[in-house]
Length: 138
Length: 384
Image (tube, rainbow over all chains, first blue to last red; front, side, top):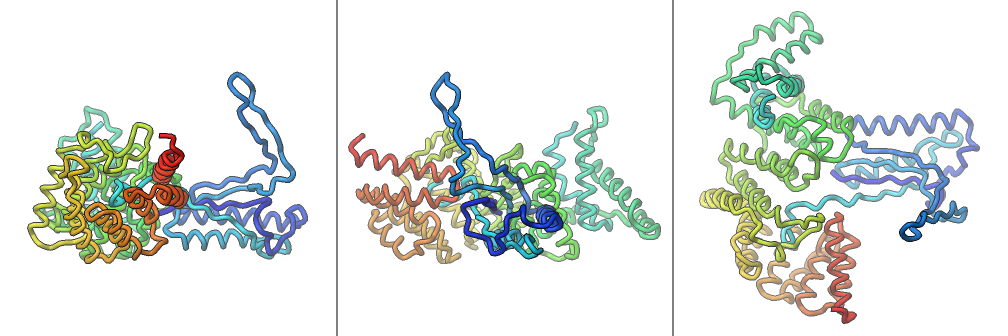
Protein backbone atom coordinates (compact mmCIF):
# COMPACT_ATOMS: atom_id res chain seq x y z
CA UNK A 1 0.00 0.00 0.00
CA UNK A 2 1.22 3.45 -0.77
CA UNK A 3 -0.20 6.85 -0.04
CA UNK A 4 -0.43 9.50 -2.72
CA UNK A 5 -1.39 13.15 -2.68
CA UNK A 6 -3.61 14.36 -5.52
CA UNK A 7 -3.04 18.08 -5.81
CA UNK A 8 -5.44 20.38 -7.57
CA UNK A 9 -4.04 23.73 -8.60
CA UNK A 10 -5.84 27.05 -9.03
CA UNK A 11 -2.77 28.16 -10.96
CA UNK A 12 0.47 26.49 -11.95
CA UNK A 13 -0.83 23.42 -13.74
CA UNK A 14 -1.14 23.33 -17.53
CA UNK A 15 -4.53 24.51 -18.82
CA UNK A 16 -7.42 22.06 -18.60
CA UNK A 17 -9.12 20.84 -21.78
CA UNK A 18 -12.48 22.28 -20.70
CA UNK A 19 -10.99 25.45 -19.24
CA UNK A 20 -13.91 27.65 -18.20
CA UNK A 21 -13.75 29.38 -14.77
CA UNK A 22 -16.21 27.84 -12.33
CA UNK A 23 -18.10 31.10 -11.77
CA UNK A 24 -19.07 31.03 -15.46
CA UNK A 25 -20.79 27.63 -15.15
CA UNK A 26 -24.54 27.27 -14.65
CA UNK A 27 -25.64 26.54 -11.06
CA UNK A 28 -26.65 23.04 -12.18
CA UNK A 29 -23.16 22.45 -13.58
CA UNK A 30 -21.59 23.60 -10.32
CA UNK A 31 -23.94 21.33 -8.34
CA UNK A 32 -23.14 18.40 -10.64
CA UNK A 33 -19.43 19.01 -10.15
CA UNK A 34 -19.72 19.08 -6.35
CA UNK A 35 -21.85 15.94 -6.43
CA UNK A 36 -19.22 14.17 -8.55
CA UNK A 37 -16.48 15.08 -6.08
CA UNK A 38 -18.55 13.88 -3.11
CA UNK A 39 -19.45 10.65 -4.86
CA UNK A 40 -15.82 10.08 -5.77
CA UNK A 41 -14.70 10.45 -2.15
CA UNK A 42 -17.51 8.18 -0.91
CA UNK A 43 -16.65 5.54 -3.47
CA UNK A 44 -12.99 5.61 -2.42
CA UNK A 45 -14.02 5.18 1.18
CA UNK A 46 -16.09 2.13 0.19
CA UNK A 47 -13.08 0.62 -1.59
CA UNK A 48 -10.89 1.27 1.46
CA UNK A 49 -8.65 3.73 -0.37
CA UNK A 50 -9.70 7.12 1.01
CA UNK A 51 -7.54 8.96 3.53
CA UNK A 52 -8.31 12.65 3.40
CA UNK A 53 -9.55 15.48 1.22
CA UNK A 54 -9.61 19.23 1.76
CA UNK A 55 -10.24 22.34 -0.26
CA UNK A 56 -8.19 25.47 0.38
CA UNK A 57 -9.06 29.13 0.17
CA UNK A 58 -7.07 30.82 -2.59
CA UNK A 59 -6.23 33.67 -0.20
CA UNK A 60 -3.03 32.79 1.62
CA UNK A 61 -0.51 34.67 3.72
CA UNK A 62 3.24 34.21 3.78
CA UNK A 63 4.68 34.17 7.30
CA UNK A 64 8.22 34.11 8.61
CA UNK A 65 10.03 34.55 11.91
CA UNK A 66 11.55 37.96 12.54
CA UNK A 67 13.68 36.83 15.48
CA UNK A 68 13.04 36.07 19.15
CA UNK A 69 10.59 38.33 20.95
CA UNK A 70 9.34 39.89 17.74
CA UNK A 71 6.06 39.16 16.05
CA UNK A 72 6.29 37.16 12.84
CA UNK A 73 6.44 39.09 9.60
CA UNK A 74 3.60 38.50 7.16
CA UNK A 75 3.39 39.23 3.48
CA UNK A 76 1.14 38.51 0.55
CA UNK A 77 -1.06 37.26 -0.84
CA UNK A 78 0.88 37.68 -4.04
CA UNK A 79 -1.26 38.03 -7.11
CA UNK A 80 1.70 36.94 -9.23
CA UNK A 81 2.34 33.65 -7.40
CA UNK A 82 2.70 31.12 -10.17
CA UNK A 83 1.62 28.06 -8.23
CA UNK A 84 -1.54 28.09 -6.16
CA UNK A 85 -2.95 24.96 -4.55
CA UNK A 86 -6.74 24.63 -4.59
CA UNK A 87 -7.05 21.47 -2.57
CA UNK A 88 -5.99 17.91 -2.17
CA UNK A 89 -7.05 14.37 -1.76
CA UNK A 90 -4.95 11.69 -0.08
CA UNK A 91 -5.42 8.11 -1.23
CA UNK A 92 -3.97 4.81 0.01
CA UNK A 93 -3.71 2.38 -2.90
CA UNK A 94 -2.02 -0.85 -3.92
CA UNK A 95 -0.02 0.53 -6.83
CA UNK A 96 1.13 3.55 -8.76
CA UNK A 97 -1.07 2.39 -11.64
CA UNK A 98 -4.15 2.49 -9.39
CA UNK A 99 -3.20 6.00 -8.25
CA UNK A 100 -2.96 7.10 -11.90
CA UNK A 101 -6.33 5.54 -12.65
CA UNK A 102 -8.02 7.38 -9.76
CA UNK A 103 -6.35 10.69 -10.59
CA UNK A 104 -7.63 10.28 -14.15
CA UNK A 105 -11.17 9.75 -12.89
CA UNK A 106 -11.00 12.76 -10.60
CA UNK A 107 -9.67 14.89 -13.45
CA UNK A 108 -12.76 13.99 -15.47
CA UNK A 109 -15.16 15.69 -13.04
CA UNK A 110 -17.87 17.49 -15.02
CA UNK A 111 -17.47 21.22 -15.69
CA UNK A 112 -18.93 23.74 -18.11
CA UNK A 113 -21.56 22.28 -20.43
CA UNK A 114 -21.58 19.13 -18.29
CA UNK A 115 -18.42 18.06 -20.12
CA UNK A 116 -15.44 16.57 -18.22
CA UNK A 117 -12.91 19.24 -17.23
CA UNK A 118 -9.88 17.05 -18.03
CA UNK A 119 -7.85 19.21 -15.68
CA UNK A 120 -4.25 18.43 -14.76
CA UNK A 121 -3.87 17.00 -11.27
CA UNK A 122 -0.50 16.58 -9.67
CA UNK A 123 0.21 13.12 -8.23
CA UNK A 124 2.85 12.99 -5.48
CA UNK A 125 3.88 9.87 -3.54
CA UNK A 126 4.24 10.15 0.24
CA UNK A 127 7.57 9.36 1.79
CA UNK A 128 6.99 6.33 4.01
CA UNK A 129 8.42 4.91 7.19
CA UNK A 130 11.64 2.99 6.52
CA UNK A 131 11.17 -0.76 5.98
CA UNK A 132 12.81 -2.94 8.64
CA UNK A 133 14.49 -5.30 6.20
CA UNK A 134 16.34 -3.62 3.35
CA UNK A 135 19.32 -5.91 3.17
CA UNK A 136 22.58 -4.13 3.72
CA UNK A 137 21.88 -0.89 5.57
CA UNK A 138 19.50 -1.99 8.30
CA UNK B 1 -10.95 -7.10 32.53
CA UNK B 2 -9.19 -10.13 31.10
CA UNK B 3 -5.85 -10.43 29.42
CA UNK B 4 -6.43 -8.81 26.06
CA UNK B 5 -3.38 -10.37 24.40
CA UNK B 6 -4.47 -13.83 25.53
CA UNK B 7 -7.94 -13.31 24.11
CA UNK B 8 -6.59 -11.97 20.82
CA UNK B 9 -4.51 -15.12 20.51
CA UNK B 10 -7.70 -17.19 20.70
CA UNK B 11 -9.39 -15.31 17.86
CA UNK B 12 -8.61 -17.67 14.97
CA UNK B 13 -9.56 -20.76 16.95
CA UNK B 14 -12.90 -19.29 17.96
CA UNK B 15 -13.70 -18.09 14.43
CA UNK B 16 -12.90 -21.57 13.17
CA UNK B 17 -15.22 -23.16 15.74
CA UNK B 18 -18.08 -20.92 14.66
CA UNK B 19 -17.42 -21.66 11.00
CA UNK B 20 -17.40 -25.38 11.73
CA UNK B 21 -20.76 -24.99 13.44
CA UNK B 22 -22.19 -23.54 10.27
CA UNK B 23 -21.58 -19.79 10.46
CA UNK B 24 -20.27 -18.04 7.35
CA UNK B 25 -16.76 -16.64 7.68
CA UNK B 26 -17.81 -12.98 7.58
CA UNK B 27 -20.55 -13.43 10.19
CA UNK B 28 -18.28 -15.52 12.41
CA UNK B 29 -15.57 -12.90 12.26
CA UNK B 30 -18.02 -10.14 13.19
CA UNK B 31 -19.37 -12.18 16.10
CA UNK B 32 -15.90 -12.86 17.50
CA UNK B 33 -15.00 -9.17 17.27
CA UNK B 34 -18.11 -8.31 19.29
CA UNK B 35 -17.34 -11.02 21.82
CA UNK B 36 -13.78 -9.67 22.20
CA UNK B 37 -15.12 -6.19 22.87
CA UNK B 38 -17.48 -7.59 25.50
CA UNK B 39 -14.67 -9.64 27.06
CA UNK B 40 -12.54 -6.56 27.60
CA UNK B 41 -15.48 -4.84 29.30
CA UNK B 42 -16.44 -7.49 31.88
CA UNK B 43 -15.46 -6.89 35.48
CA UNK B 44 -13.02 -9.02 37.51
CA UNK B 45 -15.87 -10.84 39.28
CA UNK B 46 -17.04 -12.19 35.90
CA UNK B 47 -13.55 -13.12 34.79
CA UNK B 48 -13.90 -16.43 32.91
CA UNK B 49 -11.82 -19.38 34.12
CA UNK B 50 -11.81 -20.82 30.64
CA UNK B 51 -11.34 -17.85 28.30
CA UNK B 52 -11.63 -19.92 25.13
CA UNK B 53 -14.85 -21.62 26.19
CA UNK B 54 -16.24 -18.30 27.34
CA UNK B 55 -15.30 -16.60 24.08
CA UNK B 56 -16.88 -19.39 22.02
CA UNK B 57 -20.09 -19.16 24.05
CA UNK B 58 -20.35 -15.40 23.78
CA UNK B 59 -19.36 -15.29 20.11
CA UNK B 60 -21.83 -18.03 19.24
CA UNK B 61 -24.58 -16.11 21.08
CA UNK B 62 -23.62 -12.92 19.19
CA UNK B 63 -23.75 -14.84 15.95
CA UNK B 64 -27.16 -16.31 16.74
CA UNK B 65 -28.48 -12.88 17.73
CA UNK B 66 -27.39 -11.55 14.38
CA UNK B 67 -28.74 -14.57 12.56
CA UNK B 68 -32.06 -14.22 14.39
CA UNK B 69 -32.30 -10.64 13.32
CA UNK B 70 -31.51 -11.39 9.71
CA UNK B 71 -32.19 -14.93 8.70
CA UNK B 72 -35.41 -16.71 8.02
CA UNK B 73 -36.95 -18.80 10.78
CA UNK B 74 -36.15 -22.11 9.20
CA UNK B 75 -32.49 -21.30 8.62
CA UNK B 76 -32.22 -20.11 12.20
CA UNK B 77 -33.49 -23.36 13.62
CA UNK B 78 -31.04 -25.31 11.52
CA UNK B 79 -28.23 -23.30 13.03
CA UNK B 80 -29.40 -23.65 16.61
CA UNK B 81 -29.53 -27.41 16.24
CA UNK B 82 -26.22 -27.62 14.41
CA UNK B 83 -23.80 -30.10 15.90
CA UNK B 84 -21.00 -28.42 17.87
CA UNK B 85 -18.27 -31.07 17.67
CA UNK B 86 -14.78 -29.66 17.86
CA UNK B 87 -12.12 -32.36 18.04
CA UNK B 88 -8.78 -31.25 19.52
CA UNK B 89 -6.76 -32.11 16.39
CA UNK B 90 -9.12 -30.20 14.13
CA UNK B 91 -8.38 -26.89 15.86
CA UNK B 92 -4.89 -26.53 14.40
CA UNK B 93 -6.10 -27.30 10.89
CA UNK B 94 -8.96 -24.84 11.24
CA UNK B 95 -6.69 -22.07 12.47
CA UNK B 96 -4.33 -22.70 9.59
CA UNK B 97 -7.19 -22.62 7.09
CA UNK B 98 -8.17 -19.26 8.50
CA UNK B 99 -4.66 -17.98 7.73
CA UNK B 100 -5.01 -19.29 4.17
CA UNK B 101 -8.39 -17.63 3.79
CA UNK B 102 -7.14 -14.25 5.05
CA UNK B 103 -4.17 -14.40 2.66
CA UNK B 104 -6.21 -15.71 -0.25
CA UNK B 105 -4.65 -14.87 -3.65
CA UNK B 106 -7.86 -13.09 -4.72
CA UNK B 107 -7.10 -10.37 -2.13
CA UNK B 108 -4.76 -7.44 -2.72
CA UNK B 109 -1.78 -7.40 -0.35
CA UNK B 110 -3.24 -4.53 1.67
CA UNK B 111 -6.59 -6.27 2.04
CA UNK B 112 -4.92 -9.54 3.03
CA UNK B 113 -2.85 -7.71 5.64
CA UNK B 114 -5.90 -5.97 7.11
CA UNK B 115 -8.02 -9.14 7.18
CA UNK B 116 -5.21 -11.19 8.71
CA UNK B 117 -4.65 -8.66 11.47
CA UNK B 118 -8.33 -8.65 12.32
CA UNK B 119 -9.46 -12.24 11.86
CA UNK B 120 -6.24 -13.97 12.92
CA UNK B 121 -4.57 -11.29 15.00
CA UNK B 122 -7.76 -10.23 16.75
CA UNK B 123 -6.95 -6.53 16.44
CA UNK B 124 -9.78 -4.03 16.25
CA UNK B 125 -10.46 -2.07 13.09
CA UNK B 126 -9.46 1.10 14.92
CA UNK B 127 -6.08 -0.34 15.88
CA UNK B 128 -5.40 -1.50 12.32
CA UNK B 129 -6.50 1.86 10.89
CA UNK B 130 -4.22 3.67 13.31
CA UNK B 131 -1.29 1.42 12.45
CA UNK B 132 -1.67 2.07 8.73
CA UNK B 133 -2.52 5.75 9.07
CA UNK B 134 -5.91 5.69 7.38
CA UNK B 135 -9.33 6.68 8.76
CA UNK B 136 -11.20 3.98 10.65
CA UNK B 137 -14.12 4.13 8.18
CA UNK B 138 -11.74 3.42 5.29
CA UNK B 139 -10.17 0.47 7.09
CA UNK B 140 -13.62 -0.87 8.02
CA UNK B 141 -14.58 -0.82 4.34
CA UNK B 142 -11.30 -2.41 3.30
CA UNK B 143 -11.91 -5.27 5.72
CA UNK B 144 -15.57 -5.79 4.82
CA UNK B 145 -14.71 -5.83 1.10
CA UNK B 146 -11.99 -8.36 1.78
CA UNK B 147 -14.49 -10.50 3.67
CA UNK B 148 -16.94 -10.31 0.76
CA UNK B 149 -14.16 -11.26 -1.64
CA UNK B 150 -13.38 -14.48 0.20
CA UNK B 151 -17.00 -15.21 1.15
CA UNK B 152 -17.32 -17.79 -1.62
CA UNK B 153 -14.03 -19.53 -0.88
CA UNK B 154 -14.56 -22.98 0.55
CA UNK B 155 -13.13 -23.07 4.05
CA UNK B 156 -12.05 -26.68 3.73
CA UNK B 157 -9.63 -26.17 0.86
CA UNK B 158 -5.95 -25.99 1.83
CA UNK B 159 -4.30 -22.78 0.68
CA UNK B 160 -0.93 -21.54 -0.41
CA UNK B 161 1.45 -21.15 2.51
CA UNK B 162 3.69 -18.81 0.49
CA UNK B 163 0.97 -16.15 0.38
CA UNK B 164 0.48 -16.41 4.15
CA UNK B 165 4.21 -15.92 4.72
CA UNK B 166 4.23 -12.98 2.29
CA UNK B 167 1.43 -11.28 4.25
CA UNK B 168 3.22 -11.77 7.58
CA UNK B 169 6.43 -10.44 6.01
CA UNK B 170 4.54 -7.31 4.93
CA UNK B 171 3.09 -6.83 8.42
CA UNK B 172 6.58 -7.08 9.90
CA UNK B 173 8.42 -5.03 7.33
CA UNK B 174 6.00 -2.22 6.63
CA UNK B 175 4.59 -1.90 10.10
CA UNK B 176 4.13 1.75 10.89
CA UNK B 177 3.19 3.35 14.17
CA UNK B 178 0.25 3.22 16.52
CA UNK B 179 -0.52 1.58 19.82
CA UNK B 180 -0.01 -1.93 18.45
CA UNK B 181 3.54 -3.15 17.86
CA UNK B 182 3.06 -4.68 14.42
CA UNK B 183 6.54 -6.19 14.32
CA UNK B 184 5.84 -8.06 17.55
CA UNK B 185 2.41 -9.03 16.24
CA UNK B 186 3.96 -10.40 13.02
CA UNK B 187 6.41 -12.42 15.08
CA UNK B 188 3.59 -13.82 17.21
CA UNK B 189 1.67 -14.93 14.11
CA UNK B 190 4.79 -16.27 12.35
CA UNK B 191 5.58 -18.28 15.45
CA UNK B 192 2.09 -19.79 15.33
CA UNK B 193 2.30 -20.60 11.59
CA UNK B 194 5.79 -22.10 11.94
CA UNK B 195 4.58 -24.29 14.82
CA UNK B 196 1.45 -25.42 12.97
CA UNK B 197 3.04 -26.19 9.60
CA UNK B 198 6.57 -27.36 10.49
CA UNK B 199 7.44 -25.72 7.16
CA UNK B 200 11.10 -24.74 6.60
CA UNK B 201 10.26 -21.39 5.00
CA UNK B 202 7.82 -20.53 7.80
CA UNK B 203 10.68 -21.19 10.20
CA UNK B 204 12.99 -19.16 7.96
CA UNK B 205 10.60 -16.21 8.06
CA UNK B 206 10.29 -16.45 11.84
CA UNK B 207 14.09 -16.54 12.17
CA UNK B 208 14.43 -13.56 9.81
CA UNK B 209 11.97 -11.55 11.88
CA UNK B 210 13.60 -12.48 15.20
CA UNK B 211 17.08 -11.60 13.96
CA UNK B 212 15.98 -8.21 12.63
CA UNK B 213 13.82 -7.50 15.67
CA UNK B 214 16.89 -8.15 17.84
CA UNK B 215 18.60 -5.14 16.26
CA UNK B 216 15.70 -2.80 16.79
CA UNK B 217 17.04 -1.07 19.94
CA UNK B 218 20.19 -0.13 18.01
CA UNK B 219 18.58 0.76 14.67
CA UNK B 220 17.46 4.29 15.49
CA UNK B 221 18.77 7.17 17.55
CA UNK B 222 16.51 8.82 20.13
CA UNK B 223 15.57 11.41 17.49
CA UNK B 224 14.33 8.65 15.18
CA UNK B 225 17.19 8.85 12.69
CA UNK B 226 18.58 5.62 11.23
CA UNK B 227 21.85 4.08 12.40
CA UNK B 228 23.52 2.04 9.61
CA UNK B 229 24.32 -1.55 10.49
CA UNK B 230 28.08 -0.93 10.59
CA UNK B 231 27.66 1.87 13.17
CA UNK B 232 25.14 0.17 15.44
CA UNK B 233 26.02 -0.42 19.08
CA UNK B 234 26.00 -4.21 19.02
CA UNK B 235 25.84 -4.39 22.80
CA UNK B 236 22.26 -3.19 22.42
CA UNK B 237 21.25 -6.09 20.18
CA UNK B 238 18.88 -8.47 21.93
CA UNK B 239 20.97 -11.63 22.42
CA UNK B 240 17.96 -13.67 23.55
CA UNK B 241 16.15 -13.00 20.25
CA UNK B 242 19.34 -13.68 18.29
CA UNK B 243 19.83 -17.01 20.03
CA UNK B 244 16.24 -17.98 19.32
CA UNK B 245 16.45 -16.85 15.69
CA UNK B 246 19.68 -18.74 15.08
CA UNK B 247 18.23 -21.87 16.70
CA UNK B 248 15.07 -21.73 14.58
CA UNK B 249 17.15 -21.14 11.43
CA UNK B 250 19.61 -23.94 12.08
CA UNK B 251 16.80 -26.43 12.63
CA UNK B 252 15.22 -25.34 9.33
CA UNK B 253 18.48 -25.40 7.34
CA UNK B 254 19.25 -28.88 8.65
CA UNK B 255 16.21 -30.18 6.78
CA UNK B 256 17.86 -29.10 3.54
CA UNK B 257 14.93 -27.41 1.82
CA UNK B 258 16.33 -23.96 1.25
CA UNK B 259 14.07 -21.03 0.41
CA UNK B 260 14.41 -17.27 0.23
CA UNK B 261 13.41 -16.54 3.82
CA UNK B 262 15.95 -19.03 5.15
CA UNK B 263 18.64 -17.49 2.94
CA UNK B 264 17.77 -13.97 4.10
CA UNK B 265 17.76 -15.14 7.70
CA UNK B 266 21.18 -16.72 7.15
CA UNK B 267 22.56 -13.33 6.12
CA UNK B 268 21.00 -11.73 9.18
CA UNK B 269 22.47 -14.48 11.36
CA UNK B 270 25.96 -13.83 9.99
CA UNK B 271 25.62 -10.16 10.88
CA UNK B 272 24.40 -11.13 14.33
CA UNK B 273 27.39 -13.41 14.70
CA UNK B 274 29.98 -10.63 14.23
CA UNK B 275 31.02 -8.93 17.47
CA UNK B 276 32.13 -5.88 15.48
CA UNK B 277 31.28 -4.74 11.96
CA UNK B 278 34.90 -5.46 11.02
CA UNK B 279 34.53 -9.14 11.94
CA UNK B 280 31.61 -9.68 9.55
CA UNK B 281 32.07 -12.74 7.36
CA UNK B 282 31.33 -11.01 4.06
CA UNK B 283 32.57 -13.94 1.98
CA UNK B 284 29.86 -16.17 3.42
CA UNK B 285 27.30 -13.38 3.06
CA UNK B 286 28.11 -13.12 -0.66
CA UNK B 287 27.54 -16.86 -0.93
CA UNK B 288 24.11 -16.56 0.68
CA UNK B 289 23.21 -13.72 -1.67
CA UNK B 290 24.31 -15.99 -4.55
CA UNK B 291 21.76 -18.50 -3.24
CA UNK B 292 19.12 -15.79 -2.98
CA UNK B 293 19.76 -14.63 -6.55
CA UNK B 294 19.53 -18.24 -7.70
CA UNK B 295 16.27 -18.78 -5.76
CA UNK B 296 14.48 -15.54 -6.63
CA UNK B 297 16.33 -13.77 -9.44
CA UNK B 298 15.38 -10.66 -7.50
CA UNK B 299 17.12 -7.40 -8.47
CA UNK B 300 17.14 -6.44 -4.77
CA UNK B 301 19.10 -9.60 -3.98
CA UNK B 302 21.56 -8.71 -6.78
CA UNK B 303 21.96 -5.23 -5.34
CA UNK B 304 22.62 -6.55 -1.86
CA UNK B 305 25.04 -9.07 -3.31
CA UNK B 306 26.95 -6.26 -5.05
CA UNK B 307 27.30 -4.35 -1.77
CA UNK B 308 28.42 -7.50 0.06
CA UNK B 309 30.91 -8.19 -2.72
CA UNK B 310 32.24 -4.66 -2.24
CA UNK B 311 32.95 -5.57 1.37
CA UNK B 312 34.41 -9.00 0.60
CA UNK B 313 36.54 -8.19 -2.47
CA UNK B 314 36.86 -4.43 -2.30
CA UNK B 315 34.76 -1.50 -3.54
CA UNK B 316 35.85 -1.85 -7.18
CA UNK B 317 34.44 -5.37 -7.31
CA UNK B 318 31.19 -4.09 -5.80
CA UNK B 319 30.97 -1.24 -8.31
CA UNK B 320 31.59 -3.66 -11.18
CA UNK B 321 28.70 -5.82 -9.96
CA UNK B 322 26.50 -2.75 -9.55
CA UNK B 323 27.23 -1.66 -13.11
CA UNK B 324 25.32 -4.67 -14.38
CA UNK B 325 22.11 -3.65 -12.60
CA UNK B 326 19.25 -1.45 -13.80
CA UNK B 327 20.14 2.18 -12.95
CA UNK B 328 16.52 2.78 -11.90
CA UNK B 329 16.65 0.12 -9.17
CA UNK B 330 15.77 1.67 -5.79
CA UNK B 331 18.83 2.15 -3.52
CA UNK B 332 21.28 1.41 -6.35
CA UNK B 333 22.54 5.00 -6.31
CA UNK B 334 22.90 4.94 -2.53
CA UNK B 335 24.91 1.71 -2.78
CA UNK B 336 27.12 3.25 -5.50
CA UNK B 337 27.70 6.32 -3.32
CA UNK B 338 28.82 4.12 -0.44
CA UNK B 339 31.18 2.05 -2.60
CA UNK B 340 32.70 5.17 -4.21
CA UNK B 341 33.36 6.60 -0.75
CA UNK B 342 35.08 3.37 0.28
CA UNK B 343 37.10 3.63 -2.94
CA UNK B 344 38.25 7.12 -1.92
CA UNK B 345 36.34 9.06 -4.60
CA UNK B 346 34.63 11.47 -2.22
CA UNK B 347 33.41 13.93 -4.85
CA UNK B 348 31.54 11.24 -6.78
CA UNK B 349 30.24 9.74 -3.54
CA UNK B 350 28.91 13.09 -2.32
CA UNK B 351 27.17 13.73 -5.63
CA UNK B 352 25.60 10.26 -5.63
CA UNK B 353 24.50 10.49 -1.98
CA UNK B 354 22.67 13.74 -2.79
CA UNK B 355 21.11 12.14 -5.87
CA UNK B 356 20.04 9.10 -3.84
CA UNK B 357 18.55 11.36 -1.16
CA UNK B 358 16.33 13.02 -3.76
CA UNK B 359 15.06 9.62 -4.91
CA UNK B 360 14.61 8.09 -1.43
CA UNK B 361 11.17 6.67 -0.75
CA UNK B 362 11.15 7.39 2.96
CA UNK B 363 12.08 10.27 5.18
CA UNK B 364 14.53 8.49 7.47
CA UNK B 365 16.57 7.25 4.51
CA UNK B 366 16.46 10.61 2.80
CA UNK B 367 17.72 12.33 5.95
CA UNK B 368 20.45 9.73 6.35
CA UNK B 369 21.61 10.10 2.73
CA UNK B 370 21.48 13.90 2.90
CA UNK B 371 23.68 13.77 6.01
CA UNK B 372 26.18 11.54 4.20
CA UNK B 373 26.35 14.01 1.30
CA UNK B 374 26.74 16.93 3.70
CA UNK B 375 29.47 15.11 5.66
CA UNK B 376 31.50 14.41 2.51
CA UNK B 377 30.98 17.90 1.09
CA UNK B 378 32.25 19.39 4.37
CA UNK B 379 35.33 17.17 4.16
CA UNK B 380 35.89 18.18 0.55
CA UNK B 381 35.79 21.84 1.60
CA UNK B 382 38.39 21.04 4.25
CA UNK B 383 36.11 21.77 7.19
CA UNK B 384 36.88 18.61 9.12
